[in-house]
Image (cartoon, rainbow, N blue to C red; front, top):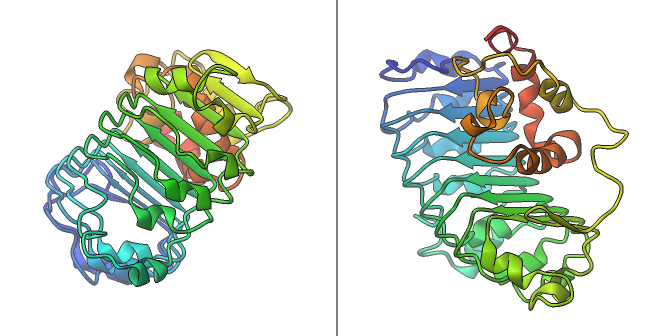
Length: 319
Protein backbone atom coordinates (compact mmCIF):
# COMPACT_ATOMS: atom_id res chain seq x y z
CA UNK A 1 0.00 0.00 0.00
CA UNK A 2 2.75 2.48 0.98
CA UNK A 3 5.65 0.70 -0.70
CA UNK A 4 8.03 3.03 -2.47
CA UNK A 5 6.58 6.13 -0.77
CA UNK A 6 10.06 7.38 0.09
CA UNK A 7 8.80 10.80 1.10
CA UNK A 8 6.04 9.52 3.42
CA UNK A 9 6.81 11.23 6.74
CA UNK A 10 4.43 9.17 8.85
CA UNK A 11 1.86 6.40 8.59
CA UNK A 12 -1.67 7.87 8.50
CA UNK A 13 -3.51 7.11 11.73
CA UNK A 14 -6.65 6.47 9.68
CA UNK A 15 -5.01 3.25 8.51
CA UNK A 16 -6.27 1.63 11.70
CA UNK A 17 -9.81 1.57 10.31
CA UNK A 18 -8.92 -0.76 7.40
CA UNK A 19 -9.77 -3.76 9.54
CA UNK A 20 -10.30 -6.05 6.52
CA UNK A 21 -6.83 -5.36 5.12
CA UNK A 22 -4.85 -8.59 4.67
CA UNK A 23 -1.57 -7.41 3.13
CA UNK A 24 0.36 -4.24 3.95
CA UNK A 25 3.64 -3.07 2.45
CA UNK A 26 5.03 0.19 3.76
CA UNK A 27 7.95 2.59 3.49
CA UNK A 28 8.20 5.55 5.86
CA UNK A 29 10.63 8.17 7.17
CA UNK A 30 9.54 7.62 10.77
CA UNK A 31 11.96 6.44 13.44
CA UNK A 32 9.26 4.45 15.20
CA UNK A 33 6.03 2.96 13.88
CA UNK A 34 3.01 4.46 15.68
CA UNK A 35 1.06 2.57 18.32
CA UNK A 36 -2.64 1.77 17.88
CA UNK A 37 -2.44 1.94 14.10
CA UNK A 38 -0.95 -1.19 12.53
CA UNK A 39 -1.80 -3.14 15.68
CA UNK A 40 -5.52 -2.49 14.99
CA UNK A 41 -5.51 -4.35 11.66
CA UNK A 42 -7.23 -7.50 12.88
CA UNK A 43 -7.26 -9.23 9.48
CA UNK A 44 -3.66 -8.48 8.49
CA UNK A 45 -1.86 -11.63 7.39
CA UNK A 46 1.25 -10.26 5.66
CA UNK A 47 3.26 -7.23 6.78
CA UNK A 48 6.23 -6.03 4.71
CA UNK A 49 8.37 -3.18 6.01
CA UNK A 50 10.75 -2.09 3.28
CA UNK A 51 13.42 0.55 2.73
CA UNK A 52 12.75 2.56 5.88
CA UNK A 53 16.09 4.34 6.21
CA UNK A 54 15.29 6.03 9.53
CA UNK A 55 13.25 3.32 11.22
CA UNK A 56 14.74 2.28 14.57
CA UNK A 57 11.80 0.54 16.25
CA UNK A 58 8.57 -1.17 15.23
CA UNK A 59 5.31 -0.68 17.11
CA UNK A 60 5.10 -2.47 20.45
CA UNK A 61 1.56 -3.72 19.84
CA UNK A 62 2.53 -6.06 17.01
CA UNK A 63 1.36 -9.00 19.13
CA UNK A 64 -2.21 -7.72 18.68
CA UNK A 65 -2.10 -8.84 15.04
CA UNK A 66 -3.77 -12.17 15.70
CA UNK A 67 -4.01 -13.07 11.99
CA UNK A 68 -0.42 -12.15 11.09
CA UNK A 69 1.37 -15.06 9.41
CA UNK A 70 4.26 -13.43 7.55
CA UNK A 71 6.51 -10.56 8.66
CA UNK A 72 9.12 -9.36 6.18
CA UNK A 73 11.58 -6.59 7.08
CA UNK A 74 14.08 -5.60 4.42
CA UNK A 75 16.41 -2.69 3.80
CA UNK A 76 16.00 -0.97 7.19
CA UNK A 77 19.61 -0.07 8.06
CA UNK A 78 18.75 1.85 11.26
CA UNK A 79 16.49 -0.78 12.81
CA UNK A 80 17.89 -1.62 16.24
CA UNK A 81 15.59 -4.32 17.58
CA UNK A 82 12.31 -6.13 17.26
CA UNK A 83 9.57 -5.41 19.82
CA UNK A 84 9.64 -7.65 22.87
CA UNK A 85 6.03 -8.62 22.35
CA UNK A 86 6.80 -10.31 19.05
CA UNK A 87 7.54 -13.48 20.99
CA UNK A 88 3.87 -13.57 21.96
CA UNK A 89 2.71 -13.47 18.32
CA UNK A 90 1.22 -16.95 18.27
CA UNK A 91 -0.05 -16.67 14.67
CA UNK A 92 3.31 -15.67 13.15
CA UNK A 93 4.69 -18.47 10.98
CA UNK A 94 7.17 -16.82 8.62
CA UNK A 95 9.81 -14.30 9.70
CA UNK A 96 12.13 -12.86 7.02
CA UNK A 97 14.83 -10.36 7.98
CA UNK A 98 16.99 -8.89 5.22
CA UNK A 99 19.67 -6.21 5.11
CA UNK A 100 19.14 -4.59 8.51
CA UNK A 101 22.70 -3.65 9.39
CA UNK A 102 22.12 -2.55 13.00
CA UNK A 103 19.52 -5.11 13.99
CA UNK A 104 20.37 -7.01 17.14
CA UNK A 105 17.92 -9.83 17.80
CA UNK A 106 19.00 -10.04 21.43
CA UNK A 107 18.29 -6.41 22.37
CA UNK A 108 15.55 -6.29 25.01
CA UNK A 109 14.89 -9.95 24.35
CA UNK A 110 17.19 -11.97 26.52
CA UNK A 111 19.30 -9.63 28.61
CA UNK A 112 16.87 -10.09 31.49
CA UNK A 113 15.06 -13.21 30.30
CA UNK A 114 14.36 -15.85 32.88
CA UNK A 115 13.63 -19.49 32.20
CA UNK A 116 10.01 -18.80 33.04
CA UNK A 117 9.88 -15.96 30.53
CA UNK A 118 11.13 -18.26 27.78
CA UNK A 119 8.47 -20.80 28.71
CA UNK A 120 5.87 -18.10 28.18
CA UNK A 121 7.04 -17.52 24.61
CA UNK A 122 4.15 -18.21 22.26
CA UNK A 123 5.79 -17.70 18.88
CA UNK A 124 5.39 -20.73 16.62
CA UNK A 125 7.54 -19.99 13.61
CA UNK A 126 7.64 -22.49 10.79
CA UNK A 127 10.15 -20.56 8.67
CA UNK A 128 13.00 -18.24 9.64
CA UNK A 129 15.07 -16.61 6.89
CA UNK A 130 17.92 -14.21 7.66
CA UNK A 131 20.02 -12.32 5.13
CA UNK A 132 22.80 -9.79 5.73
CA UNK A 133 22.53 -9.11 9.47
CA UNK A 134 26.15 -8.28 10.38
CA UNK A 135 25.39 -8.08 14.12
CA UNK A 136 24.07 -11.62 14.29
CA UNK A 137 26.44 -13.92 16.15
CA UNK A 138 24.01 -16.56 17.40
CA UNK A 139 20.29 -17.18 17.15
CA UNK A 140 18.59 -16.05 20.36
CA UNK A 141 16.71 -18.57 22.47
CA UNK A 142 13.30 -17.01 21.86
CA UNK A 143 13.59 -17.98 18.19
CA UNK A 144 14.63 -21.55 18.97
CA UNK A 145 12.23 -22.17 21.83
CA UNK A 146 9.34 -23.52 19.75
CA UNK A 147 9.69 -26.89 18.09
CA UNK A 148 7.55 -25.85 15.12
CA UNK A 149 10.38 -24.47 12.97
CA UNK A 150 10.63 -26.36 9.67
CA UNK A 151 12.93 -24.17 7.55
CA UNK A 152 15.95 -22.16 8.66
CA UNK A 153 18.12 -20.09 6.30
CA UNK A 154 21.05 -17.89 7.33
CA UNK A 155 22.91 -16.04 4.58
CA UNK A 156 25.61 -13.37 4.48
CA UNK A 157 26.04 -12.95 8.22
CA UNK A 158 29.80 -12.40 8.55
CA UNK A 159 29.85 -12.56 12.36
CA UNK A 160 27.52 -15.51 12.82
CA UNK A 161 29.48 -18.02 14.88
CA UNK A 162 27.31 -20.89 16.03
CA UNK A 163 23.97 -22.62 16.14
CA UNK A 164 22.86 -23.03 19.72
CA UNK A 165 22.74 -26.46 21.32
CA UNK A 166 19.01 -25.71 21.61
CA UNK A 167 18.81 -26.60 17.95
CA UNK A 168 18.36 -30.21 19.00
CA UNK A 169 14.87 -29.36 20.25
CA UNK A 170 13.71 -28.32 16.77
CA UNK A 171 12.06 -31.66 16.12
CA UNK A 172 10.23 -30.38 13.03
CA UNK A 173 13.25 -28.87 11.23
CA UNK A 174 13.40 -30.19 7.68
CA UNK A 175 15.51 -27.66 5.78
CA UNK A 176 18.72 -25.92 6.90
CA UNK A 177 20.57 -23.47 4.63
CA UNK A 178 23.83 -21.76 5.61
CA UNK A 179 25.71 -19.48 3.20
CA UNK A 180 28.54 -16.95 3.46
CA UNK A 181 29.06 -17.25 7.21
CA UNK A 182 32.87 -17.54 7.43
CA UNK A 183 33.01 -17.52 11.25
CA UNK A 184 30.54 -20.38 11.56
CA UNK A 185 33.04 -23.20 11.94
CA UNK A 186 31.25 -26.20 13.47
CA UNK A 187 27.82 -27.75 13.90
CA UNK A 188 26.29 -28.37 17.34
CA UNK A 189 27.05 -31.77 18.81
CA UNK A 190 23.45 -33.02 18.83
CA UNK A 191 22.69 -32.42 15.15
CA UNK A 192 22.13 -36.17 14.80
CA UNK A 193 18.97 -35.77 16.91
CA UNK A 194 17.30 -33.77 14.14
CA UNK A 195 15.72 -36.83 12.60
CA UNK A 196 13.25 -34.78 10.53
CA UNK A 197 16.05 -32.84 8.81
CA UNK A 198 16.13 -33.94 5.18
CA UNK A 199 17.93 -31.13 3.37
CA UNK A 200 21.19 -29.45 4.45
CA UNK A 201 22.93 -26.90 2.22
CA UNK A 202 26.15 -25.08 3.11
CA UNK A 203 27.82 -22.61 0.77
CA UNK A 204 30.81 -20.27 0.99
CA UNK A 205 31.70 -21.25 4.57
CA UNK A 206 35.06 -22.99 4.01
CA UNK A 207 35.93 -24.13 7.54
CA UNK A 208 32.48 -25.59 8.15
CA UNK A 209 32.42 -27.28 4.75
CA UNK A 210 35.75 -28.96 5.47
CA UNK A 211 34.39 -30.33 8.76
CA UNK A 212 31.30 -31.69 7.01
CA UNK A 213 33.08 -33.66 4.30
CA UNK A 214 31.85 -37.21 3.97
CA UNK A 215 33.66 -39.78 6.14
CA UNK A 216 36.67 -37.54 6.83
CA UNK A 217 35.15 -34.38 8.31
CA UNK A 218 34.93 -33.97 12.08
CA UNK A 219 31.22 -33.13 11.83
CA UNK A 220 30.28 -35.81 9.31
CA UNK A 221 28.74 -38.18 11.84
CA UNK A 222 26.46 -35.35 13.01
CA UNK A 223 24.87 -35.06 9.56
CA UNK A 224 25.28 -38.52 8.04
CA UNK A 225 21.57 -39.26 8.59
CA UNK A 226 20.40 -36.39 6.36
CA UNK A 227 19.10 -37.60 2.94
CA UNK A 228 20.30 -34.61 0.91
CA UNK A 229 23.47 -32.61 1.58
CA UNK A 230 25.06 -29.92 -0.57
CA UNK A 231 28.52 -28.54 0.26
CA UNK A 232 29.20 -25.71 -2.20
CA UNK A 233 28.87 -27.34 -5.64
CA UNK A 234 29.18 -30.91 -4.40
CA UNK A 235 26.11 -33.04 -3.75
CA UNK A 236 27.12 -35.43 -1.00
CA UNK A 237 23.97 -37.51 -0.66
CA UNK A 238 21.31 -37.52 -3.36
CA UNK A 239 17.65 -38.30 -3.65
CA UNK A 240 15.05 -37.48 -6.28
CA UNK A 241 15.37 -33.81 -7.13
CA UNK A 242 12.99 -31.62 -5.19
CA UNK A 243 12.22 -29.86 -8.49
CA UNK A 244 11.36 -33.01 -10.44
CA UNK A 245 7.70 -33.67 -11.18
CA UNK A 246 6.47 -30.74 -9.11
CA UNK A 247 5.06 -27.35 -10.04
CA UNK A 248 5.06 -24.01 -8.31
CA UNK A 249 4.29 -20.43 -9.14
CA UNK A 250 7.89 -19.62 -8.29
CA UNK A 251 9.04 -21.95 -11.05
CA UNK A 252 6.69 -20.17 -13.44
CA UNK A 253 8.22 -16.82 -12.59
CA UNK A 254 11.73 -18.16 -13.07
CA UNK A 255 10.68 -19.22 -16.54
CA UNK A 256 9.74 -15.66 -17.53
CA UNK A 257 11.79 -14.33 -20.46
CA UNK A 258 15.22 -13.28 -19.24
CA UNK A 259 15.02 -10.17 -21.39
CA UNK A 260 12.61 -8.53 -18.94
CA UNK A 261 14.22 -5.77 -16.90
CA UNK A 262 13.07 -5.78 -13.29
CA UNK A 263 15.63 -3.31 -12.02
CA UNK A 264 13.08 -0.48 -11.97
CA UNK A 265 10.29 -2.52 -10.40
CA UNK A 266 9.16 -1.45 -6.94
CA UNK A 267 8.34 -4.99 -5.89
CA UNK A 268 10.48 -6.78 -3.31
CA UNK A 269 10.32 -9.82 -5.57
CA UNK A 270 13.24 -8.46 -7.55
CA UNK A 271 15.39 -8.87 -4.42
CA UNK A 272 14.64 -12.59 -4.26
CA UNK A 273 14.62 -13.82 -7.83
CA UNK A 274 17.59 -13.37 -10.19
CA UNK A 275 15.46 -13.12 -13.33
CA UNK A 276 17.51 -10.77 -15.47
CA UNK A 277 20.98 -10.54 -13.98
CA UNK A 278 22.00 -12.83 -11.10
CA UNK A 279 24.62 -10.33 -10.01
CA UNK A 280 21.88 -7.82 -9.26
CA UNK A 281 19.98 -10.15 -6.96
CA UNK A 282 21.67 -10.54 -3.59
CA UNK A 283 24.93 -11.70 -5.19
CA UNK A 284 23.79 -15.28 -4.58
CA UNK A 285 24.39 -17.92 -7.29
CA UNK A 286 21.18 -18.90 -9.07
CA UNK A 287 21.61 -22.52 -8.02
CA UNK A 288 22.08 -21.61 -4.40
CA UNK A 289 19.20 -19.14 -4.37
CA UNK A 290 16.77 -21.56 -5.98
CA UNK A 291 17.90 -24.33 -3.67
CA UNK A 292 16.97 -22.12 -0.76
CA UNK A 293 13.82 -20.61 -2.22
CA UNK A 294 12.10 -23.64 -3.68
CA UNK A 295 11.46 -25.58 -0.45
CA UNK A 296 10.22 -22.36 1.11
CA UNK A 297 7.71 -21.66 -1.65
CA UNK A 298 6.36 -24.99 -2.85
CA UNK A 299 6.13 -27.02 0.33
CA UNK A 300 5.12 -26.37 3.94
CA UNK A 301 5.48 -23.90 5.54
CA UNK A 302 5.24 -21.94 2.28
CA UNK A 303 7.49 -19.08 3.40
CA UNK A 304 7.10 -17.29 0.08
CA UNK A 305 3.36 -17.77 -0.27
CA UNK A 306 3.17 -13.99 0.10
CA UNK A 307 4.93 -13.78 -3.29
CA UNK A 308 1.80 -14.96 -5.08
CA UNK A 309 0.36 -11.46 -5.17
CA UNK A 310 3.64 -9.99 -6.33
CA UNK A 311 4.02 -12.60 -9.05
CA UNK A 312 0.76 -11.57 -10.64
CA UNK A 313 1.07 -7.90 -9.81
CA UNK A 314 1.08 -5.46 -12.72
CA UNK A 315 4.34 -3.84 -11.70
CA UNK A 316 6.11 -7.20 -12.03
CA UNK A 317 4.50 -8.36 -15.25
CA UNK A 318 5.08 -4.88 -16.76
CA UNK A 319 8.23 -3.63 -15.07
